[in-house]
Image 1 (cartoon, rainbow, N blue to C red):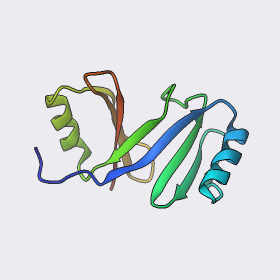
Image 2: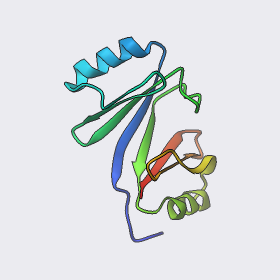
Image 3: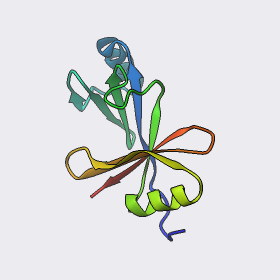
Length: 118
């Protein structure tokens, strides 16, 4: 294992069926307006957390919430978790602004997100 630990679970994506309604609920819950507000993604920053809303589950086709663990070296962490028994679902890729993401499936079928900001 590497000597660096995760930086915590700071990003959670939620699939939603009605983006406008979900945006209103999350704005009320978090007490802040969205930082990113588009037809394909609405994102909130609150208390050091990023909460994203994906209409229809987004391009990932999510059917349940997905938490992203922030890590300092995503490639190294992917290698470690796959060696420990996870399988890669979505390979490391840049989603803009130098942010790298990937998803893996643990041995019980749970989806785990990994995120690295450059």
